[in-house]
Length: 275
Image 1 (cartoon, rainbow, N blue to C red):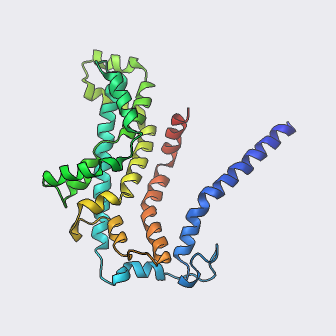
Image 2: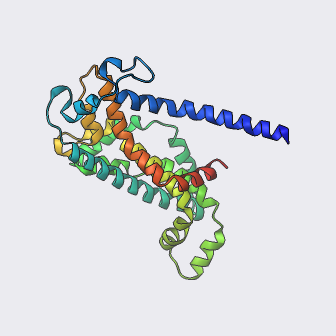
Image 3: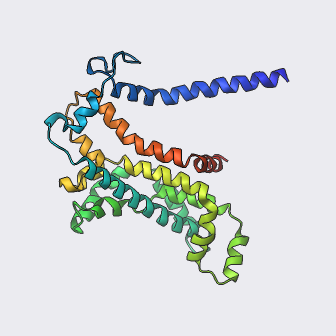
């Protein structure tokens, strides 16, 4: 009994230590975003706090030019939401075919998905840009959304979860005359809410923080996303650590809000992925 209490206490200590290690970088970033510029990166907890870094951002940055903050924010929301919805829809359809439908070449496609996940997306940057440019989509929402319409990671996650769903549900639905599309969106996906939450949060976070691709395919101020707008406010050599911390905090706020809203489903989904 005493030994079990000691083991439990030891586990709590380890968990608390790991929590501090993971949370400390973000807490350090938040504290330094409010720190006086003379104290940024000088102490773990600055002595004086100010809103100067945030005022610098909203006043136009290094150039001191008014920026379309609200429009850029809505651009990020539109692009991230539509891209995530497309990746989830296409990922679920491909995964359903790989997990629950028999056809020639299924194993080959499944292995191809796994194989391509080992390659960084940056190697397709130039050919994808040329396709977008030749299609006349440059500097449009479609240029930012369509190339992100399929996520191999989403396919992989959904495929593993769909395989765990008993085939009896699908066979019963087919006997009732349901099509594969109806089975997917009326039976399989409602049973996959936990993993759908995990996929949604990770895909949205990935798209929300995208910078390189958006910088390449947009030119006009009306198409700028929040990431691109913030990147334009700093000189090529940086030199503004306080505002950089503030910009990072602003970018992480929507992700934190989404996680807090779906934390229960996220935990359930992660428990499945760790099995």
